Amino acid sequence: MSETRSSLLRSTPFRLALTFAFLFLLAFVLSGAIVYQLMSASLARQLDQSIKETYSLIASTRAESDEEDLVSTVKDHAQFSQDKDQIFSLTDKDGNRLAGDFTAAGLPDGFSMFTASLPGVPPDTEYRAYSGTVGDNRLTVAFSLSETEDLERIVLMSFGWATLVITVLAIGGGAVLASRVQRRLDGIASTMVDVSHGRLDARIPLIGSGDDIDAVSAQVNAALDRLSALVDGMREVSANIAHDLKTPLNRLQMILESAADKTASGEDVSTELTDARVESQQINSTFDALLRIAQIEAGARKARFVDLDVGPIVETIGDVYADVAEDDGKSLSTTILPDTKWYIHGDRDLLMQMLANLVENALRHCPPGTEIELSVTRGGSHILIHVRDNGPGIPAEEREKVFRRLYRLDASRTTPGSGLGLSLVKAVADLHGAAIALEDRNPGLAVTVSFPTAKSPGGQAI
Image (spheres, rainbow, N blue to C red):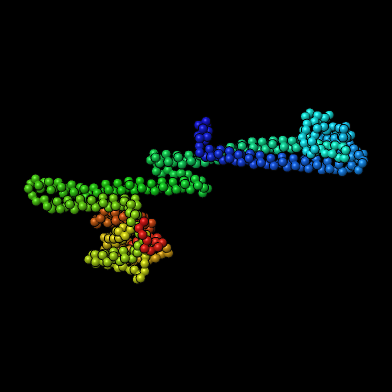
């Protein structure tokens, strides 16, 4: 329990909550101090105004050459103020008291403060007084500050209690919120620890609130999905390399052993050397294709991207492979709308390699008499390149697998090839932000590569 509490105190969410609570309390105290000062100034003004009004009211009762009404009024006011919160003094020119609760001596004209000790009043009670001359007499009206001080004391106590309550709520609420956030962060940390220990299926739990932690967690989960897929792909590639390259390596070994035996007996080994060179070239081609796919997936070729028209690329591939298809007993037709530009952002050489692989794949796996169509269309904000044929097609359950490296359909294992052609197509499409769709034509297969349209034709290399 103490370890959990210590961890919470060290956590960033709790520290942020404390910082927010401190800033909130600081703002509350500053605003409270300002309000208190404004209230005190307002009470002081109101008190001065009441004193001045009372003084003016009493002074107005004096008639010319007649002090009797003035004296009577002061006596009445002094009599009505039983709790001595208001006291009065009326003295003659010699300082003798004519009426009132006390004898004001030494007070200046206008407003002043003094301390008085009167019967029934707490000692050293402070008063706010206004003094002036009325005829030949001197009149002083004083109001006690006790009510104002009591009100200010109540406000200060209320403010103090409010500060205490807010502090407790801010710290307590911050601790609760911080603990919730910390639990989610601990979930992220726990998931990453599991991943570092090899559990690639571990994922960060989401609460579905859509907040920033959920958004980051979803992105981390997506990255973990990609990582898991890459690791699975690497395992599968390793297995496929061991499986698919074992045969040519065994053949190469057998050829070399046969050549060694013939050399020992003095026979001609030129045929074996030729076969060995073919096998080694096939193995090298496989590894070269794997390296090229890895380079493309790493994005190394994006430095050569420009805005280009794919129409001439499609026409070139169609012209080059039309004769190849005819020699193989098949036909290849190219359809492109005249006077139309099809601009995308990409690498010309990679796009030509991608289209060549698609056409070669159709030529290699379709029987004689197959008709292959190569075309370009527009679909909304995308440029679509189509390669269609009426051959045997690909079973639906195999269409996602054919893009894996070294994966080959059972029916195509007797044909030449390394199983990397469509993997290269997928890598080039992903590099260009394009999507590949395989559809059944009944009979045949339709491959559609959808590229985003370039924003402006003729752009410069990035």
